[in-house]
Image 1 (spheres, rainbow, N blue to C red):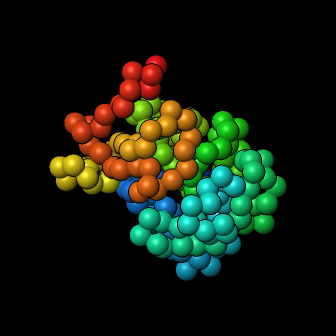
Image 2 (image 1 turned 45 degrees about the horizontal axis):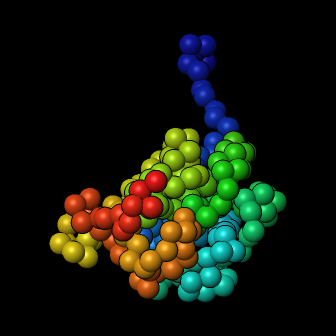
Length: 195
């Protein structure tokens, strides 16, 4: 055997995939698609969502076009780590509702060889970075940015317009509170929200 010929064997490496974009852009739909493909490949999967997200279903992630997938509801990111030791692929929806420790948790799971797929809003309703998503984008191996359609002009939309009067950073809702808007048609509703 030729001694110059080296055969490399790599430890199975994990990674982080982030799916981000505005509301109504298909983030959850894409997460569900990837999870279902992992199941077809006979990989062990588990999906998590934050307790605060009870819009369509208590125990499923649900896209705005009504696709769904069973999920475990967790109060914080630490629970995800505790409950995913026996799976190969972890899906996390609505990541913007978790604290910043989600970033370290995702890193730990990827470092242990798991595929971690995270979906969430990258901007809040003021078009400001929505933590912890910017940090996840920085450490992810793969990033997909989804676009919606602006309800005003039909252009690609990457912003979420709040259409109800609330200054709360987090207001869980769907079409009752939000619309997809392009850069041109996204507006901040009051002077107090600009701060």
